[in-house]
Image 1 (cartoon, each protein chain N blue to C red):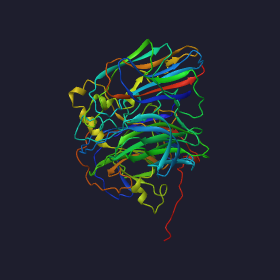
Image 2: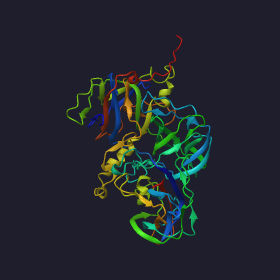
Image 3: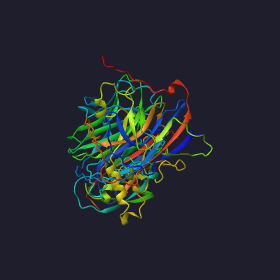
Image 4: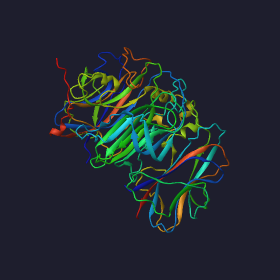
Length: 176
Length: 414
């Protein structure tokens, strides 16, 4: 098992083409950070008139600017710190690169009664939006290669500003 | 090479009324007890499918956080249950409590929305039926999972000395009971413990349950799995299932469950390996709680490792009749898997040494902390398509380690 860190943010508001959560490292970071899980949960409880929306999982290849920084939480306090070149955030300005996945989500608040789509999106197992084949050791994880400026993020591509989501990125920090 | 593997199932088990001595006997639709010297049985999976109808309605919607902590104080102690009875107890510096007085938080790992209601009368409520501890197939996690490790490259949540983890309620909301179930593994030895955590939602800024590895423990704990389900009882005498593990015997255990080897050339199971349906489980008082403290049986059965509410199962079965779900491969179209050990090879399975068993038992009013059980002579409502399945392995083990650990005994001076 490699050193594992969690980047998470709560109550991230929606906006068209917004970075909902991202992980990034600079070319000066020689480590390999591997993105093992991306989780998105519809945890906002405020009553809104929500919509069905779409999000994308993309690579980006430019340095992020602006937005709100996320402080990673380590699963083991004995883990060494992530390289200084690694950052994570929400709402940052990024330039799209490769598209890996587009998925449907929703920002209607969950309710106590009813099998609303919104309710399903609060369940942690259903919030695992990446990878598509959990635990398949034949597949590489999305990898930030050491010495390469790149990262990955969840991007909302629907025009909506109501509601909010909780998001997580779980990654391992490896030398190669 | 894996150990010799077996599958046992009950098919349709009769619904039987609960009677007898409430302090000692438990009506059990399915049980595996190892009374064979020289053999060790390890239960890797337990599956259930059943139907029952009740009507309870309450509601609460709020957040819970999974938080790292650096200190804990107060609270009611919770007892972790060993998966293998011969392993050492957790050190006294390890604190596991319900409703601690205070915790010092140190980093949020996840926020989630837990069960807030039970709506038996409303079939389509996702807040009632999905939150059983059942597996949803290829995803490898039950709907009630709030933390697991789907990728073997990921670390568990590691608790070193002076570190802990808590279920923490950041916001308002105070309605009835929920239950968490957590598996922890001692890093150096692999010894696996399950901690059943009953708790109720409280006011904002309160930790409802916590595991803290205190300074001087000498161990590192790995948190590998955590589930949260709803345990509302309201005013109904609501049958509920408990999973019991530990020293026990079977009474009136003539009703055999079908047992099949995975490999046809496997030798027959020893006669002392009992796989029964519709029997009574008698906890072995001489191996469990002090003999004169029978109230422990009411408070929490010795070796109780989990509970689940059959009302949720009913919801799931009913949902099959709805045409809009017919085209969807959702969780209720599969067996509901209680898989507290199974697929995570870092965890020990439920290991039955001689005199020990794993049993599903049911009774009324079992969920409330400290509440006395209520005798129910006739199982309420209809009970249809009730089938339990277990997968277990058998291996030879004729050493002293096969004997169950005897706990200190107290005797009345008569």
